[in-house]
Length: 231
Image (cartoon, rainbow, N blue to C red):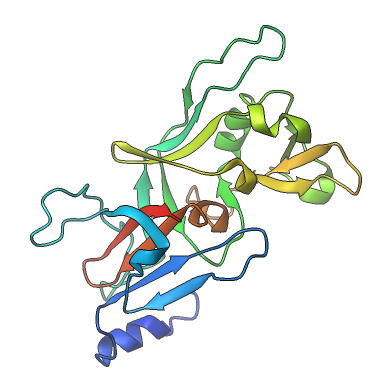
């Protein structure tokens, strides 16, 4: 998009090189082998259930419908952006009372689904509101940059459920992917994998920390993005 060059996949589509004008991602975690980019295909061995395609497909009336929302001047997807209903956070325990906290939801935002980004980025405003709900969280060391937050590593299992909403569905991430690692060597605090950043004018980015959980299918012609639970 920055160089104004035609993307590699768009060239494949234009030349008719693909069996289907889609590409899909499966991502492993923890350094395991087996991550996969499938050009022109969807690998059903990499997900469970049906892929929820976020746009109408001919003959698929049982699907949730959401479009890619940004385009180039010639009509191609600009940054594979979707409208999200927001972050959903549920069921953390209050450290003093032991009671479950009330569910929380951020405001909605536009989000780029990006395999080239490791973590998740939202606006600084939303990040601040989100981490206010995470027990014992605080701004992280300046070494991590403005908009980063830390929490006690041993509380990870009690944090609860973190999800991102599309339409009436919520897509949760594994808490292993929320943990960006220790704040420093030997630290008892870990940095959260959701960062606050306003560089993109309010557009959030769901990177690998999200995509490791959800097999992601990008349909170029419709255009649309589909998600199914990754194996």
